[in-house]
Length: 145
Length: 145
Image (cartoon, rainbow over all chains, first blue to last red; front, side, top):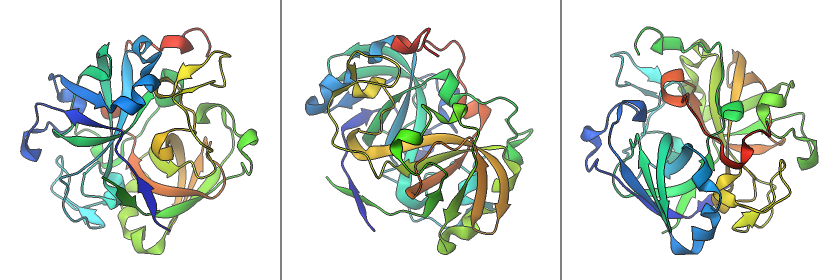
């Protein structure tokens, strides 16, 4: 089974090279723009009421992946599904960004951690009841953040 | 530009029909199993330390989408990017589930809200520092949850 997906926009980010990106968006103080292609602009109605959005995008510069990889924050190999590395099956990234402004088909956002020109796949509203969990155990990341 | 992706597993859920599913996983008390195909099983190393996982999957039974749609929790049309409807460009869903047990290539999970047989696209560890935001404004959902 093969699934075909299509970019619905493109991400304009100050991070031009993989090595520039902070380990996750919560450490990024920079802003960027999410351009939604014109044919999807109407879908942005009501988005401006939300302070945060979940962005799905393609890790378009990721290299080959393997089942074990070394994460930013440890020097031991970890299972790919226990780390957030871009080098993973299907190469789909998710980031929570702060919505600063909606201007037509352009979203100005903060806490950006995507690479410039990442293809945009989806935008979802960030909703505390859906997206925030309490009493979280963070495995090998415990004590590292 | 067209991107090809491949399921890396399949989700076994007690929800057999779209109409059975609660509005989001945080309302679901049911458990299910996420089956990772054998060739990806090694990628589950270290996953067992995490209490919650982010699951990316395909809304495989979604119908045609439009830029405006009526969400569960309101009777007015909203922009598709301001709601979590499955009928959306690229049909990719994300859910946060509670990890109960890892058994070989099977993850037993709680708070499941996916439809049975949803194709699995990715598993990422849920990490408070990356995934939890404070001072969130939830737009048209304010007062509805």
